[in-house]
Image (cartoon, rainbow, N blue to C red; front, side, top):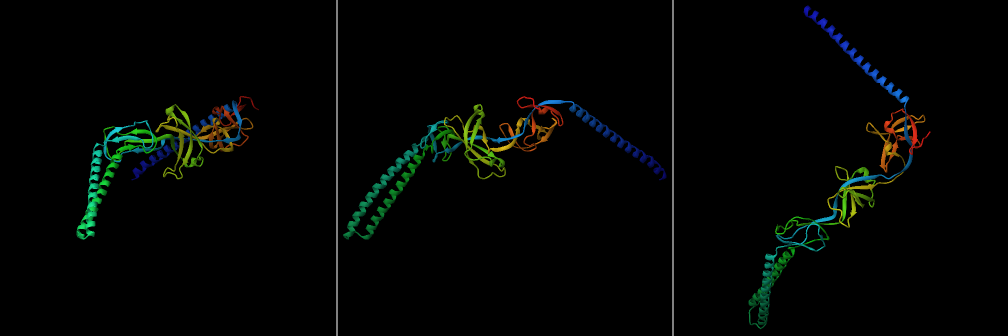
Length: 384
């Protein structure tokens, strides 16, 4: 035991020495890094002290700002519907195709009606037969009634004649109903447009067997198109119905069209918390097509007499928007700004600078905090 104790004592001693040397090495490295950083800062300060940069400056003032919001949307028809037959049948003829203009009640397609027409003729014959039987039954009842008045026939005979007359009347009514039903089916073989518009889709070819309710055409009113955009909670308060909207379409080489904000959704969609803004765009010459991708630009409420700086004066520092403020000794100080809406190259400032202060509007990207500057006005004139 004494032998092992004598071996452990030197080992602990060397461990303590090693830890001490490691601590000294760490402290030495930290000292060198700190000394280098301090020397670099001193060198940068000396460089800045002897350097003057010519920049353009402007005085911070107030102005009106009219913010604009942009949204993306697909163009939709003001209304559209699928047109389908009310009866099963093979499509005999199609009278229109995609792109054709149609009017309300216009015949678009016709089902094969040969079988239905034959059934209608058969039903018409059955109705005539039933009417003839009714006439005979009525005459027979009248004769039996006259004979009964003279006690020439029994009451039973009169009742039988009356029953035959009523049964014949029932047969006429049934034949009339069947004829009306078949005529309605024959009429349903004519597929007509419910409203005026343009055929934007044809689903089937002539000769196809179509089931009742299966769409054959899609008809839409494209005289006015809609651009529906999703608007956030922060933007909905800025918009109002009736506001003019500028529409730009990439498919037409960025050509611009005029629209009007016609509807704002009264309730937000959950869970996105967005509202639907609906813009109506007149399309009298049909240059705009359903499904085109559009960019909408809508003006918001004008900010009256707010503090603003040029957007070009902003400098990004660690994800923060800043400007260089010129102090009385012609040195600059970089300040972080709290910004509002932007429009027309100007941005509203809520905090960070005051009215009347001078800020650098050109040459700011070569500045550092504390650097001396030589000022020029925004027009290039020397200032004091």
